[in-house]
Image (cartoon, rainbow, N blue to C red; front, side, top):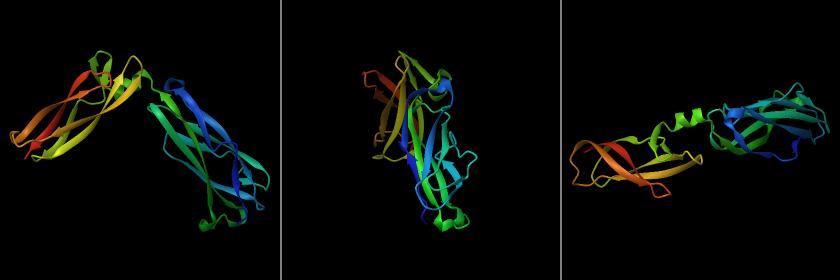
Length: 205
């Protein structure tokens, strides 16, 4: 197959810092047919439901012609860094029915999304005061035997700056712990030295 779609410009575009409250953002990519056969755009798909790919009305691209496709990212509930991709599946016009001859070209949007206050409250429901909120402060880790270790990740939101800090909480069951269901406090520290307590619910065997 002699057809070949290339992206004019960058295949990965940075949107910089965007705000969830401002709603969806999009970028138009231009694809040029560098081959000798007319290209048929068969379908498009994306990396997740938050992103859509619009192929436009022109499904056929003649040699040396270009076509615009739009990759659109909806940041609702998507705080933090993101990388979303869109893929166009294409083939030569004469081989539309031939699955084996299909090719793909992929484009991406990257950036950082600042969450809205509503989303942050949903993601970090536990308020501790001192400008800190937790994603969770209690973990059900099931049965454990003496000598076993478990880890869970706690994400702390620093509300003054919007910074999210991931901290690993570790629990080790010792032979001295009484058997049965135990609610064991585990101390963790933020990068600024603030000590926090989370609870591991464990069945000591």
